[in-house]
Amino acid sequence: MAKFDENAKPFSEKWLDERLAVNTLKRVLSTEYWIPKDINFLWAMGMVLAATFGLLLVSGIFLLMYYKPDTALAFDSVNYTIMSEVGYGWLWRHIHGVGASVVFLIIYIHMFTGIYYGSYKKGREMIWISGMLLFVVFSAEAFSGYMLPWGQMSYWAGMVITNLFSGGSLEAYGLVEWIRGDYVPGDAFLTRFFMLHVLLLPLVIIGLIVLHFGTLRIPHVNNQKGEEFDFEEAAELYKAGKKKESKVIPFNPVFLSKDVFVMGIYFILFFYLVFYHFNFAMDPVNFDPADGLKTPPHIYPEWYFLWSYEILRPFPKDPGLIAFGIAQVIFFLLPFLDRSPNVAPASKRGLFKVWFWLMLADVLVLTVMGKLPPEGIWNQIGLVSALLFFALWVALPFITKAEKKL
Ligand code: HEM
Image (cartoon, rainbow, N blue to C red):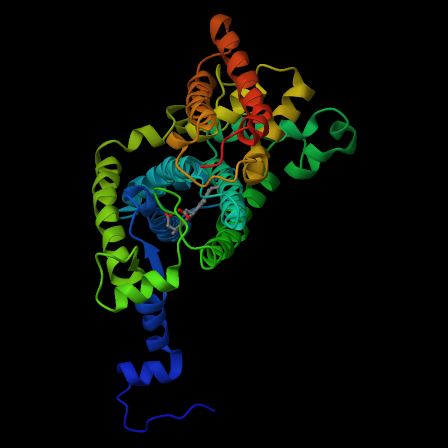
């Protein structure tokens, strides 16, 4: 049993340290956790993501106080009760809606930063895999949340996406009815997606964030040149007062203060969107209540799913489903398909540089095409972009294997 100081004042540093080891945490964060000096603002995106997730949790809890998971009541509980009757209900809804959209923009920036600097390579595979798990579960979280207002887009996007599980032999197993709890989306569908959105998936996300942070401990954070160096030695230099020569900075307060600065700028932009441009995160079609007898002329998902939706669309049902399935998981394999030993920015990696920019451009084109109706030239551009997506993945092991060692 630990020794307790009888004279320590309740909640003083000593009292807390004896009970919660706060000084150990402080010591670890400020003198035992080191971050490379050679990084830029893109390395703050991880903390920006964590903060946005925190805001989504808090705003979600406030919305949950008035939301009704019942097909007869859900639409009005959101569009009438929360928006007009509850004090500041509109603010929580706008924060939640804008947060759900912006979090994906930051996730994509964070992912492509990792790809650009090779932060998924040898030693860092688990950081990448836990990040990809976060991406997949975040996608499920966003989709389940989109069902909750029970508007036209909730209903029809729910119908289209769950229909994916009726492809080929899946039809025979009745998988789609099993997922919906009915033949069409209805009460059982809404309540189970409600449970996923407010309980199960947030718990999984919290667990995965802890895992993702844990995976960063051993391989250390990468840097702009992908340079490997002795962290212990660099830390000793810093501690000896040779801060200029040292290649690292302590996590707290140096790195954290930079993170907080970037977060400050981010939140100014974020709340600008919340107050003045929240509409971009709310589909006008979803302000009509769900109606199973009235199909909207054009059904499309939120912007962050458009690229994978467009990969599915140009193909017939079963190949489309397979293409969509591959697109969801192929990024998991990046550390294993990239065969080059070089950990360096893409600009220094010959053909990989071309691969990176083509992949980014292709995902952007797919996103734009996913929003346009599948007609004429848009269809052809969509098909070419979807084929290019797969061609790039097939080419990756070959071009990286041939890459010269730096
Ligand atoms: C809510 C989701 C996420 C949170 C809260 C989060 C948080 C973080 C944090 C705090 C860092 C360290 C600092 C930084 O580089 O920004 C980090 C690093 C990293 N994350 Fe994430 N992340 C998330 C999602 C993802 C996703 C979707 C991926 C990609 C698949 C990913 C891949 C990485 C990689 C490769 C690193 C290492 C960067 C380096 O070593 O330079 N993360 N993450």
